[in-house]
Image (cartoon, rainbow, N blue to C red; front, side, top):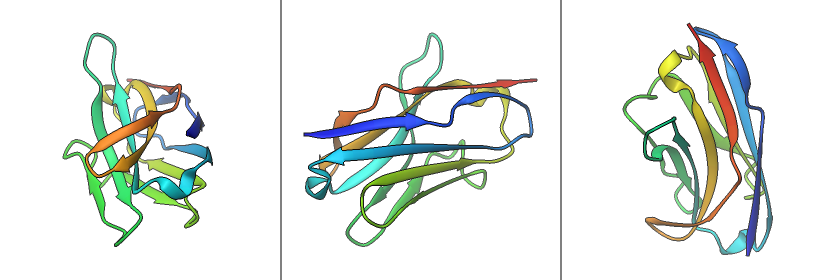
Amino acid sequence: QVQLVESGGGLVQAGDSLSLSCAASGRTFSSVAMGWFRQAPGKEREFVAAITWIGGTIDYADSVKGRFTISSDGARNTLYLQMNSLKPEDTAVYYCAAAISYGRYNYWGQGTQVTVSS
């Protein structure tokens, strides 16, 4: 089992920056990747960014490329998401997730709310 706890959400204005953190515990050594997802009101959860531990491959959704940066502490214990130039459409609950096998995220945090006002 892997436990994930997000933090860092809040209310900001358009153009501001915000940094999210995800603390991972448990069998973190069993994960092959971790990522960030988000779900806006009335919409399905969508992929934001992910990083694989072997090879260090990083991937972003087109909507956040150039504005968001995913990183980790290198020990699979903490995942970060630096969000710059935030837009109202970035408003969502942001979730951290861990994958035991590629392409499938098995463990999820409870989420942290990010609200961007115009």
